[in-house]
Amino acid sequence: MSMVNPSIDYLAEKVDSKYSLAIIAAKRARELVDNAPKLVETNSNKPVSIAMEEIGQDVLSYETTKGGIK
Image (cartoon, rainbow, N blue to C red; front, side, top):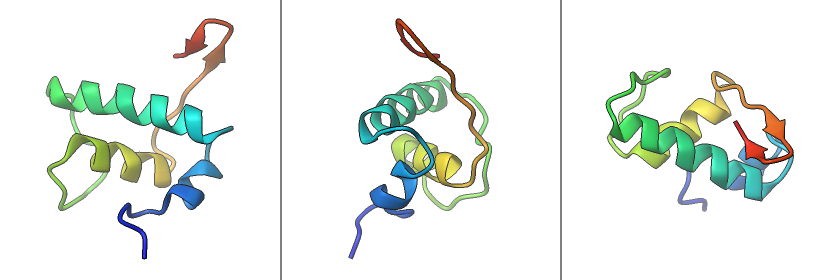
């Protein structure tokens, strides 16, 4: 049973690596803490969980650069 819904393995398929997944989710969670609007309907109040759901539903886009992820 996965503690994260959607599962990490499913989410890792949406990005190029689990490392990228962690960075993208962390950056988005910080935006949510700073009162950015949620992009998905969710029952969760936790910023990281909301970010993971947004990644799982393909509503976030990201760009990789030489310096990191934008």
